[in-house]
Length: 227
Image 1 (cartoon, one colour):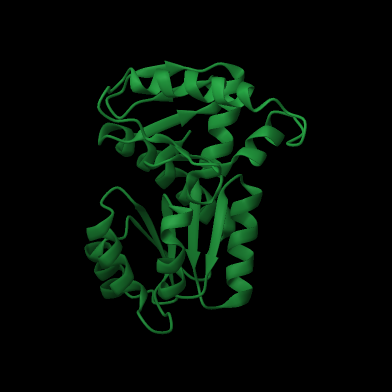
Image 2 (cartoon, one colour):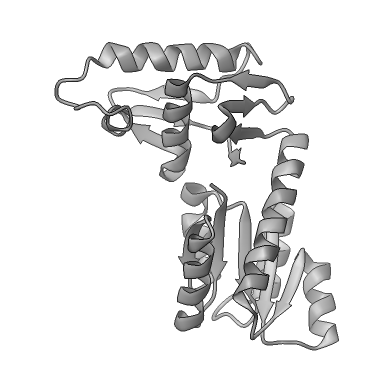
């Protein structure tokens, strides 16, 4: 599921944008300013940001410029009531991929975000990131090596990468497998994870982003793009 952060200080518009994006299949984070976006960044790991210009505190132009330098592959869609040519050009020069003017049709916004998400996925895989295609039971390594997954491995990986910080507890994974954490044989989970880690390790013997957390669960340490 594509992760989209929406930064907008108008609560009604923020709710409307988030509702339409969620209804279209995106995983959405709502933020009223850049500070809240920064605070949630490492947990949510957005792939696309929908960004207002007239924000309290740091404005959207400054945020876009900063994000573009920190995250070159990020999709940035600016949404602003500033409709002048100079503002639109400035936004694009500072890092926006698209500049939409308010009021905006939600169908157009959703289409632009979807197009930007597709571009990010392609660029991310080409630039060395993991690409996960759960519907195809497929994980592509940063080098482009395809890893076929079993249904169980696919379910476990889907659960891990969809949790905050791409970290899932044992209990969460057991429930995803349809088990009861009290009676479930933990060795079944450990064997399944071990097999998945072995597949991932085969692409690079020196690094494995799927790590165990002692007495807690498992984490995928590198960003995963979903397709």
